[in-house]
Image (cartoon, rainbow, N blue to C red; front, top):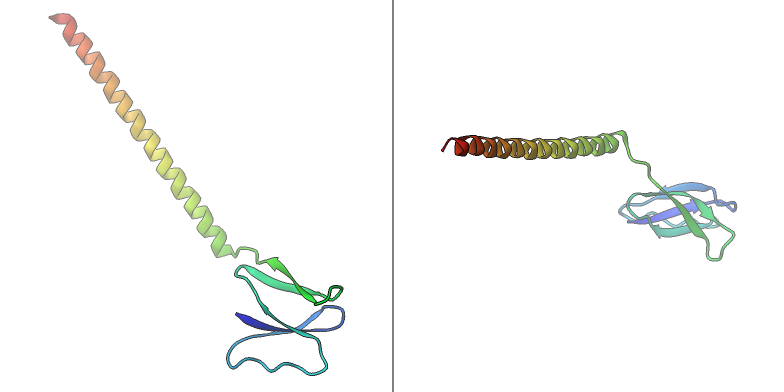
Length: 108
């Protein structure tokens, strides 16, 4: 989304505006139009470069996002455990079948 960043001479962000209708550009105050990528937020503006550039940082995950990730990790661990238990069960059944066959075959 096209965003208007208004900042002072040191790069301190005074205002971040976007939406429709597009915000009015200020007169006499430095500003930039930028597209902010998903998952990023504006930290400040680097005024030492020409043209000035925004300094972005990653948005930290929310508590909900962290819980969703933990939930997914637990679900995957449970699925892996269930698969391991099923494999062990099949191996036990096969071993019992082989044992029964060898015991039964020994009587004939």
